[in-house]
Image (cartoon, rainbow, N blue to C red):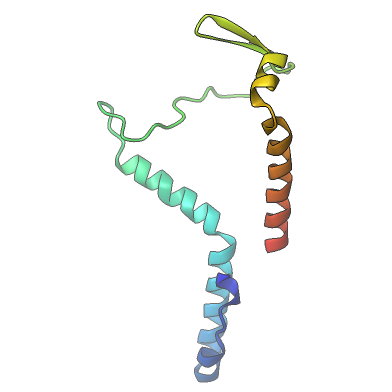
Length: 113
């Protein structure tokens, strides 16, 4: 882990520099996901061209909150309507594994802090 890199040698030479380095490493280890999102956003913005799409982004987002309602339990794709049970049967074991992986991911993130 980045925050666990020993800075003892630097602290022996210069206590202030060692403390600053420890804080910088701690900040980078905590903010690494945000830094990656920022870098990816900057790259997408830098290569954005109206004529040609190098990256597919989310597009225009409507302002405001959506109206309060239950989510749709059916969808239409290629003139075929899929019900909730059709979608669940297509997912198979994934309908159990997806929430399980999500919970394990959250536990791993929580243990990192």
